[in-house]
Length: 305
Image 1: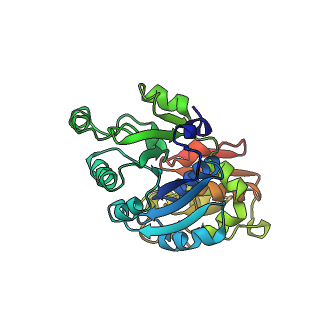
Image 2: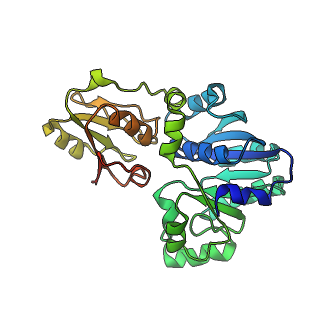
Image 3: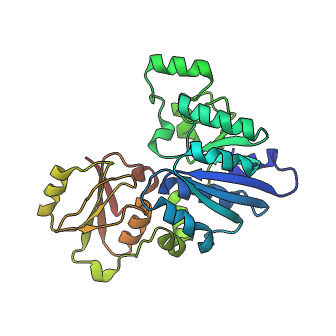
């Protein structure tokens, strides 16, 4: 079932209120995609949480940029635990959040549900973990399941729907979820191409230009949460232009005198759209980044380290 088909079940004919919670730049993109397809008769509120790079600044900038119509507010909180009371006070018809697996998520969502009983809780895709059924060991999974908490993304008893980009792949990995699955129509790359200038401004990303090109090809290294100095040193022998992009939750200094270090705030998909406008070919080295799921192009090669 597509998103547009699924929304009719909660549409009472008037305006609805939908609340989105995003904890990463990728989740912001998926929130924009879902929000776009909900239609014009929806008041939307954004809540950004967590410690991703420049999260609070990005949130302050969100509504002013008018990325898409209908956004009424944007608020930042360090965690969903702290945001849950505010989210409930919005009295939304729908809550969209990036995860429901585990006891901690269950407790936070239960608290939210007690404060906002009529709000439907929906979980949306957040990367490679969306399609995994091995988030917990079999013993721990059995214990968690007894509580009604989610053992994989989407199957908490508190969750009404799970929105994914690839329903067939999700159901193949996690059978028995047909009733809950809704399809996300537009990928993160679709969202970026639709709102390129606004998203560059949102994430404070000054696009690279032909003046930055010193070679026909380039390398984009996507870091993990921690430094891999040994691998970065191997890039010094490359004749291609090299760009280092820290993970949004990276702490420390990824700096290297020989390379161009990008900001950690923008999603890697945004940077790749930009690089393909400049270079003949882009090689992406990564540690299991979800970007490989969402970006497919004949001139981009992904290499997992």
